[in-house]
Length: 604
Image (cartoon, rainbow, N blue to C red):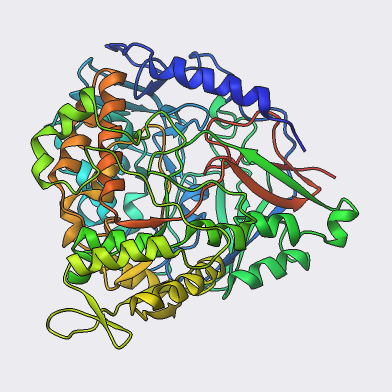
């Protein structure tokens, strides 16, 4: 196992240097673009720094996934597409380096050009870029993809499209986008839009879920597949971009396979039986106690820990404020008080994992827990009267008793808050003044065994309050359908967050998501202070303002008490075949999309 201590210090220094770098005006085509400052790599770079440029090609990697899939279109709201379809078979104009906060380098596009204020962006396609069927990737394909995704695609694409004033072909291989809003992230977002083959969709309804494989330009094509059971990706020997510096040392496996199982425990059993070759463990307690396997003792399976320096994100039980019982912050605080994190962490993880203390914790973007000051207070100032207690004064999650399932002190506080909100216990049942019982449903996806274990403990802790929630477990397709339409009271909620948050934050927390289906605003929050903070983030030209805006947003989210957070880990835990290898250099984001399987390789 590799030691990462000094490498971690070096990465932390690099983060600071990158985020304080001055912004750079560009008035000519560039090889890359960064959200702030310059790209770390020069125009003549030979490979990304976190890859093994000489990694051998060949072999296969096999993953296990819970659930299933019923669609081959990952770009629309309807249906469930298999993991990896978009990542391995479809490309974007620019590729992201996961060793920098937010920097893109040319992929389908050989260059990107924008003005100092980023009011427009122009991409120049590579003349050699080809789809898997050998046809060239054209400006017409690019423009059709932008418009189709922006109008018929998943809601996550639609926000940026509304900010485009015009889209023009300015040369045989050039497309220019002019924006109608001040938003420095837009050139990067458009550089990451999937590029699809226009002619494949002639006469077809793009927004309709189907099992027709999209024709992409990526390093892999789909081999054999069976909906809901498995899918394989075969490395394309004729891949047009195999010699690009950005791709050197990546896409090394001849085959990537995903097998689907109905339950998370079965996924682990399939790994221990040798049916899959890599398994990502999320439970620290299990990592320490359930891996005494003969294959590990013999060295056939290796346990690797991959560090990262990204924000904690949020992971836990989200309360849907569209349900009136969760519309009161006092009720949500009571739900948090009843959740004895310290006991649950001890029972499931041996107490080894740190708690998520805010959405951007574990990074410079996270809030402090004292009173808001400086620019943070300035951003939140106009909204003070409408923010729940703790947003300005400071807020921290309650601390429970690790030795007892129920922390009596926190339960007493929860009872007091519920009474203030108009709820009291009669005959062991919590009711309001209209004698309506306090009842709700907790929605979980089949196979989410860790979430189920947490919820089992939590349900018992709620009984002293007179609350007996109904726990409903549904398959992955039903879970997606119900959460897309916000048809739940409480559900398991996970949102990874980056070191360069931007427009996607409106999809996560913006008011449009209260009613429009398919957003990530599962809690149904409609808080002008959150949108104001996001707008400052998008308008910022200095890193000081950007950090303050993110910290202000973090306060609004955390003190809003929408999610009962659990733990995060600064280490990803991967068990894998001894034949699977990864580079010595760990990227800034660690085990993030772009790391496994992209930079891994097979070797006897």
